[in-house]
Length: 222
Image (cartoon, rainbow, N blue to C red; front, side, top):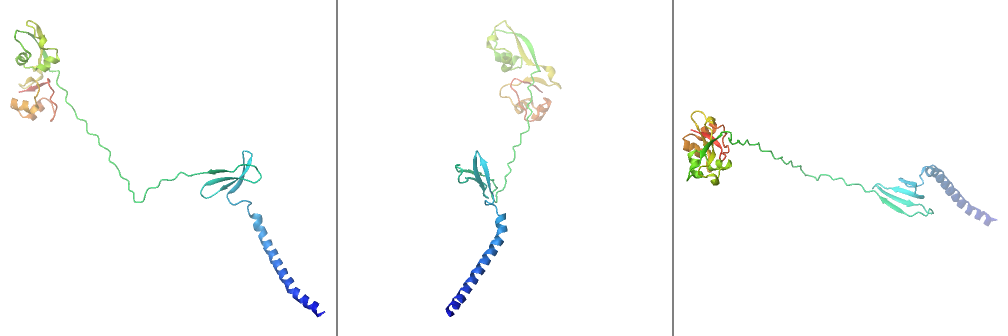
């Protein structure tokens, strides 16, 4: 009998420990039930979709990559779709914008129109020995102006009548006379030959400073 009592005393602490452990496990299971009931079947961001007859699981990660994972037993093939975002181009630190000035258009220049309205024609009968130069000196005109009106060396047939272009005196006032510009003439050169200032010559002919002097045009000189 003493041995049976000793064995009972030995089993009592073991049973007590087992009972306590079982009670703790039961308590933990009781506390875990609400959590397990509210827990989703799949990780956050994972859903199931039926795509072309195949049940797949779609898992999205923070990097915007989409993985298509077929469930076991569906017979579908695995597929992977990756969504790549277009990188944004950010300005580099310390970079400064440079403003390029737009080229300014040059102001239009007014080009004087040669005075072609101050030309009249004088009939002349060609004499033997006449040349273009001698006729231009006789009528105070220029060979260029005559050529522009169809007079050439072949026109100088003795007895032929030609119409010689000359400056119209009615275009000049104040005792000034017409002058046909020849090759090599300049405003300052004509002014010097005429004994007047270049500014006076320009103003009298209605031209600004720096005006173009056209060959065979008619101007007024003193």
